[in-house]
Image (tube, rainbow, N blue to C red; front, side):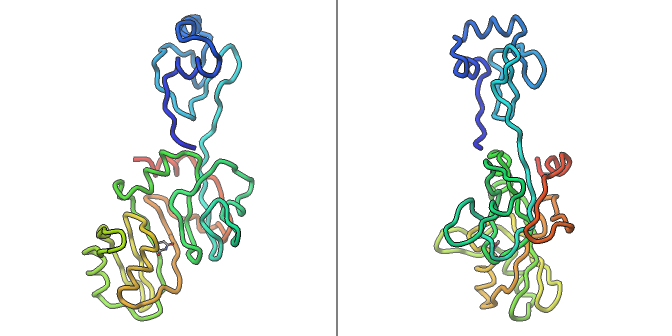
Amino acid sequence: MESKKARLDRFISIKTGINRRDVKQLLAQKRVFINGQPATTANQVIDQFTQIECDGKSLQNNKPIYIMMNKPVGVISATKDDQHKTVLDLLQPLYPNVHIAGRLDLNSSGLLLLTNHGEWSRNLTSPNKKVNKVYKVTLEKPLTKEYAEVFAKGMFFPYENITTLPAQLEIISEHVAEVTLKEGRYHQIKRMFGRFRNPVLKLHRVSIGALALDESLKPGESRELTVQEVQSLNH
Ligand code: URA
């Protein structure tokens, strides 16, 4: 759901057909409630999650939804697909209006966030916001110290004409690295290791910002975020 900001009087007028002057009267008579409190200002800015009631009748009552999933390998990060099962097919209960906040490739696994709150997901995925995404990567060939230097410098991707933001690479064992990105370019990690001709065998996202994947979620399982977890991702 897009973040739709609007003036309160305009919103009520469109929803009810009452003209804006008469809406002001409704406010003065304390017949409009915003999130359970009488509304006082006609030009107050509301968004898609502001609860609005007029004369006891709900005009808007959307709830923000924030979900974490342990995405399994072989399921596609899309809302619809003709060939593969999608992450939305795995969601129980069904949440019809959610979208994915930062995709993972078909063969990648781990922390995937879904929400109906467009502004929230944009804040997490925009390269300008520089939110850390941490991945555990298993490689076909042994790693060397040179990898970390090249990742930290940034890599030029001629197709998009961009240089990747400095990324951190920590060698965990001969074939396993922990990579921290502040952006999510198309197949970014696979392409970065591709420069070393070192194929990625496994790619698992362990965290986004302050939020780590709940280890009790089995592949394919999901749960709603707690209020604290949602707040930990707000800047
Ligand atoms: N980089 C990739 O190549 N794939 C992902 O799924 C995530 C980051």
